Image 1 (cartoon, protein in one colour):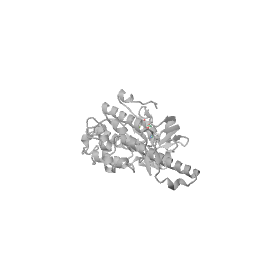
Image 2 (cartoon, helix red, strand yellow):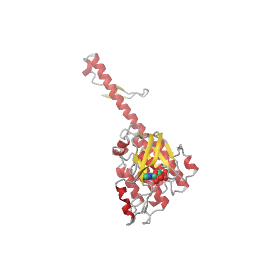
Image 3 (spheres, helix red, strand yellow):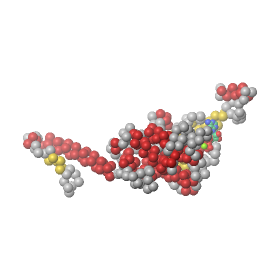
Image 4 (cartoon, protein in one colour):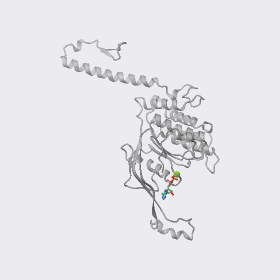
Length: 351
Ligand SMILES: Nc1ncnc2c1ncn2[C@@H]1O[C@H](COP(=O)(O)OP(=O)(O)O)[C@@H](O)[C@H]1O
Ligand SMILES: [Mg+2]
């Protein structure tokens, strides 16, 4: 059997050498065989087209040294890299489709519990706290009341409010991190058909909350911290035959280049007691670690705290790129940032 591809035409035609075998079959079965064949050829053609489209994108994993996809080069362009990465990861037949997760919330009411007066426990006054153990003498504190909103995939929401107004509570509630407070049963939260309960069980890791404080293993180096973060989010099937290790280390190098922390690869992260990277660098490690998740729904709680204005703007641009290229949904509580950070493209509700 010979498959011909006519140069002038777009499709494929097929001719068979052993025509004699079909000569005595009736007309209807002949037509059926023809249609089956043309269908099979159609599938083959579509597959070839998809492969040729994919091969026309340059893979960021095999980028030339010094090109704009090389994280170690001065020409590195984060936006071009993000597009190339998206095309390789999601644009091929082997890759899984990109996940997106918008969020809608209606009549969001959140309550905490507390006592009207609180005091430092000591041996003498600890007896007074016994009723509180049985939830006596504790009153409900309303933190959020009747908040409505809709954030679609690819959109950014900036949450603004004075301290104590409930910004962190709103972000935590949407990300499903409701430990320590209660969401009222009348509140509706919906992640494009997925309930918050399903989101925090079956799709754990797809909605993330990045807290204001940096929490790391202080003895581990920055490079290892980020490598581990990338490794945990490696897809089961990596298109292009890249190994898990190469995939994770490439992503680590890229995110370190984006946030200007490549020089700290072998430095310990540290904390208040163990000397490690500086406070601003540690904050960028926290951001990089969360950004490596490429989660479809990301909540960032005052992540620009302690950053210089250039890095705060870079953080906002990185989120914007993730929204534009990966269609992620980001909710950001942001304070003390330069105007350029807000100009990246948010819209603002205020609490
Ligand atoms: N679990 C809780 N129980 C009681 N009150 C809480 C609880 N969590 C937060 N609060 C109170 O709710 C208010 C809003 O908290 P939060 O969301 O952290 O504010 P923001 O992030 O805007 O500064 C604060 O006054 C805080 O004390
Ligand atoms: Mg807060």
